[in-house]
Amino acid sequence: MLTGKGLYIEGVDFGADNYNSQLYSYFGCSFLGTGNSSFYGNVSLVEGQPGTIAEGKNYNYLYQEPPDHYVDEIDADEGTILFRDQTGIGRAISYSGPGNSYRVIHSTFLFGALRDSINTRTELMADYMQYLTQFTGIQDDFQPKPINSHLLKNNPNPFSSVTKIYWNITSSCQVELKIFDCSGSLVKGIFYGKKDFGSYELTWDGKDNFGGNVKPGTYFIQLKTGSFSFTKAIVKTK
Image 1 (spheres, rainbow, N blue to C red):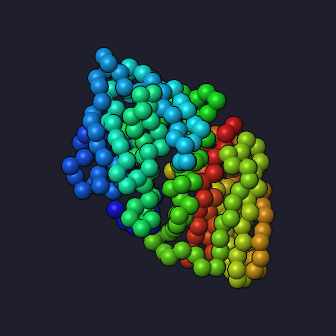
Image 2 (cartoon, helix red, strand yellow):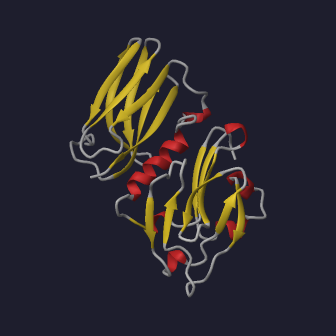
Image 3 (cartoon, rainbow, N blue to C red):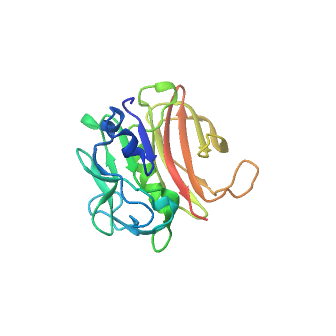
């Protein structure tokens, strides 16, 4: 695994298939077992653990249906358990790697099988993406972290109609500020041009380059200055 990167992986048999491999050591967890078959069931709900990015987020799960077959059971090795099931068994974990060299989230349950209630999957994915990208950002061509620019934040996030993007640069340079979807396709060009040293604020109204409203989901704001780029996840809810 490359340092300075983020990875999310899920799968009910990922641990069962890989717990003896070097790959599994990158996820900071211990494999406890494969879980039960459909007859007995495994996960009816998952509970976000205190002090983690999942704190306060609880979800029902498709109990005794195909996504619940043989959901792996895990415990923390060097990582942090994010979710435990109704019996207290670990089902998802985060890990920042040795010396905070990378970030990973491993979920033994399937994200799509969570059921929205007070908490939504959109909210959870926003927290996941924030965790996975905030350490180094997403950089083009393995470039070092930008030295003359920084994408600060957007507010609100998640947002439903309008969000403000706050950013700054520490020297005069050419700037591009764009919105991409999860496939990497350009959604909206927010700004192209030269900016001097200072802090800036721009607004995105959730529309694409053709004036249409984008669908709810996760998007990425990319601030690019010359050969450097910094990217932050953003979630549109409706």
